[in-house]
Image 1 (cartoon, helix red, strand yellow):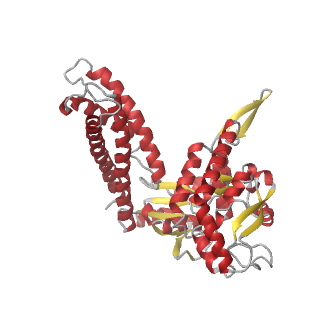
Image 2: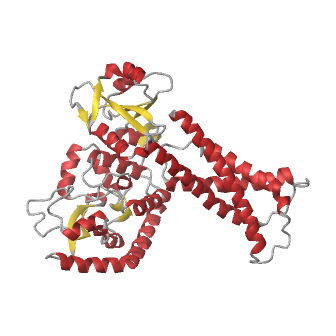
Image 3: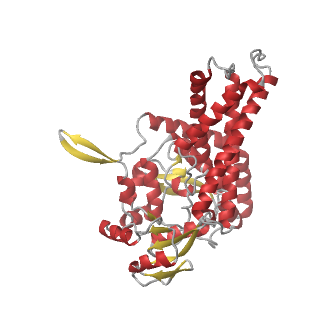
Length: 470
């Protein structure tokens, strides 16, 4: 099936599912208010048929709000957490709009009915659960169909460097995104293949390839290309209905929120000052204290069992203490459960790679489930780290990366975290430092309470399935 036709059918299916779930929630809310005599019996509740007008207003107003906030034009890879938040926001606005329209349109008419405040609460709660579950079900079905080859967009990737490899790796590892990569395009002539996907032509071949291969989307993965080259590439890709996406550079990320300030009348450009300041800093620290204390209490049985197993499995201490760089590039001792042999770093610090021989038998299990990271709740409690933030590196690596990666040291403007935006997007372990830095910088410039909550939820949801943990 054509990808665009499939997308339209999916949007229609969402609208039908929303209508059904909103109607079911309204019916459930009526029954709950009628049958649950708390805090008092519903003496003014009318017959269900008398609420037909209110039902139509409620469903219509909510669908209108959903349409206006683009809940029927979903991104390709919207997370379940983001969709829940969008439904939460849309339902809240929809019910408020419905109540207003009920007063304006139905009052003093044959469709007027007594509105129970508790029934409205029941309706909102039931709709939040039912609409979210319905949408998650449809999204899961869409992902399964795309993974099996239905309605995939035919894509070309321009470039064969690190950024192109990262894009390709993400696509190949996420078939539910609905891409079929036809090949890569590059003028260098090398390499001939990237991750077993062939290089099928040069930049000047783009118009022919787009036409002959019926390409739906071109992804330009040349983050360091000058503007004139990007304009030239976009011009080559010009064809009706072909989508063009560009992998951003670090500067693009930082400059996406440029504002104008002045210095005594002299205009200056402010490139997105750090978002975490003032009361937000205090609030984040309060979240860290509460979260780390709760984590240590809840996980203490698991941590005690882990400590015992480490002592039984191999010779050496339970904890591994390593110096890492934190806020303002200041070093601190980071705690982990020991997962390697005692002589693991005799030759100096090094990256842990897949099937690393230095990892103990138990350590391989601990690292796979990220249990070795649990003692860092102590670091959070002490104030050296945060629950969410850029992952800290060893001083030796920091010195090396600051020479290699533009603006790498900017990630030390905030506390290091147990988890971070890069990690929940699959960039952990032996992955690109440059790409991780982009995600860390974006997090620093766009911090919010909701973003931290979302990262924590996604961390909990995926830690059992992260293949990059070793």
